[in-house]
Structure formats: structure tokens, C-alpha cells
Length: 92
Image (spheres, one colour):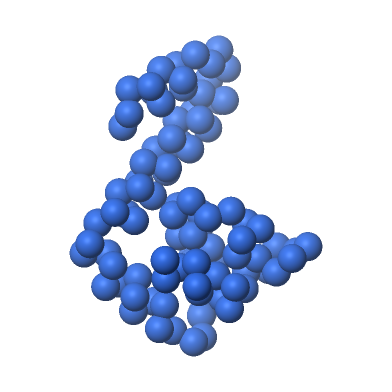
């Protein structure tokens, strides 16, 4: 993990807020590792070939890990995950 990220987390007085920030930093770092490793590229390509999704929340969480915002992958003015909208972003 990057040192400046940990320093940012240590500056909080509230333990609960500190824990939330630490989890967020950890997830961002995991997302960077996940998106940069070539061995995951084949797995992501296989998911992208799917037409029907049984677990859209899982893919939504994966998209969040990859750094995509909710507005980019959900139907406008809702929280409904749209695979048609997300698929081109997923393939990048």
C-alpha cells in the first residue's frame, strides 16, 4: 500500500471513520492490482462474452473495484445495473 494513503488514514481521530477509510484504500489498491495483472485479462474477457447475468451485484462490485462510478454503469436516475451500458466499459 502506498505510504501517503496510510498517513491519510492515520490522521483521523474517530476509529470508525479511520476503519472505513482504511477499507476504502485497501479496495482501491486491490482494484489497481486486479486491473493491471494480465492473467485476469482472459477471465474478464470470458465474463464480457456473457449475454445473461445471474449475479449483477457481483459484477457491479467488480466494476466499483475497477474504479467505475455508479452513474457510468447504472440506468440513468436509478440504481439498476445495466449490462448493456457496462459491457463496453468492462472491455476497456
